[in-house]
Length: 526
Image (cartoon, rainbow, N blue to C red; front, side, top):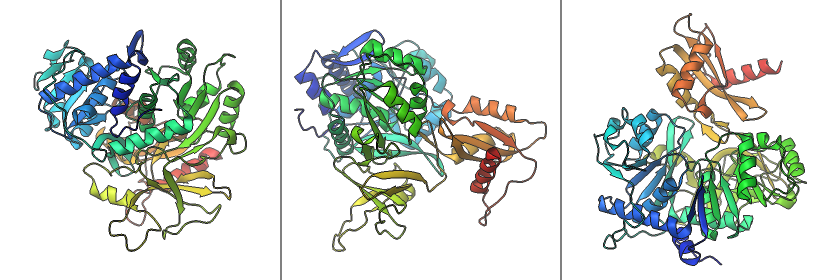
C-alpha cells in the first residue's frame, strides 16, 4: 500500500525510496529509474533554491514531453515553488501571455524554443532566469541569466526547500476561457494528491502498470498520467504524438497496459487493426463524449481491455467515471461521481433537479481548485457556494459550477447534454472564440469576425469562422493561411466563410455568434 502523501512530489520520492530500481520514465531509448528521476528532480530543486526563488514562485516549463520536463515540474514543487506547464503547441505570443499573466520567475525550456521566444520575452517583466535543457545556444538570448541543466549529483544539502503544506499552491494550468485570453487554474497540493488517489483507486492502478503518455502535461488529463503512476510506482512512457498508427506500434513495443486519450484520437484508433495479444489492461476517455459507435468499435477491437468513460474539467480535475461493467448498458453515459467527490445537477435557482431533468453540473469536494490566477471576476462566476449548505455556516464551501448541462437518470448515472456558454471544445481542448477573433483582427484582413463551434463527427466540435474582409480582394484561403501561421493546430478554423454585409448583432450590440452558428449549421444540414 502506497503511503499517504500530502504534497504532490512526495509520490515520486516515496516510490524512489520504496523501489529505486523500478522504471519511472521511458523517453526514446532512455530508461529512467525512480532513483534517477528523483535525483534529477532534487538537482532542479537545489538549483532553483540557489537561484533565490521565493516560496510559491512560478516556474514555467515549456518543452515537449521528455525526462527534463518531468524533472522540472516535480523539482519545482520539491523546492516549494509552483510549476506552470505550458503547452508546447502554443505560439510565442501565447506563451508570453502566460508567462506575464502568472508572473513567471524562471522558464525551463530547450535552446530551440528559447530562440523562438527571443522577441516576446521582453514583454514578461517578472521573468528573471532561464534554465536550459543543455548549455548549447545559451548565447542566443543574453537579456537574462541562462542556467545550464544541473547534473543529478548537483544538489546542495544546505539549501533546505521552502516549507509547504497541502493547501499551498502546487501548479497553475492554463485553459482557454469563453471571454478572451486563457485563464490559469490554481491547483493546491491537496487538489492534485486527492485527484491522483481517487483516479488511481478506481482504475486499480498497480506498480506493474505501464502508461503511455500521449497528451500534453499542460492538460490536467495528461498530467494525471504522471501523478497517478508515481503514486503507485508505475511506469510512464513519454510519447510526442505523431500518428495513430504510431500509438498502436508503441503500445506493442513497450507492453503498455494503460492508455488515455480524447475522443478524436479514439475515433482514429478505433479504425486501426490492434494485435490479438494487445497488452492494454484499460483505456480511458475524457475531454468530451466518445461517440457510441467508437465505444462499440473499441470493445470489439480490444475485447480484453477495460474501458473507462470519464468527464472532467480543469477546475476540478475529474468529476465522473463510468465503470467498465456499465459500458455495454450505458455507452452514452459519463457515469457517476469519482471517489471523494459529489456531483450535483442543479437548477438556475440552486435547487436540485429531479431525475432526467436537465441542469448544471456542480462539483464539490477536495478536488475543487483555488480559482483563476489573477482573475477574481471570473473566479467569482465559476467558483460559488455549493448548493444546500446550512445557513449557519459562517464560511460557505465553494464548488465548481461547470457551465455544462447534464441530466441524471433514476439510477444516478449522468449524461452530458451541452455547454451553456460559447466555449468551443475541439480535440479535447477548450477554445475561446474571443481568442481566435483577436488573432483574426490582428491580421488586418478583417473588419468583423465571429468564431464558434459547429458539430463535427470526429472532433465533437470544429471551429468555424465567419468574417467580413477589409478588402474585397481578400479570400478565405488567405485568411486561413494567416490563422495557420498565428495559431496552434488545434485552434485553426476548419471552415472560413467570408461575407460582404455586416454581421448580425444581438440586442446588446454584440455580434450574434449563436445566430451565425445556427444559420451555418442549418445550411450545412440542408
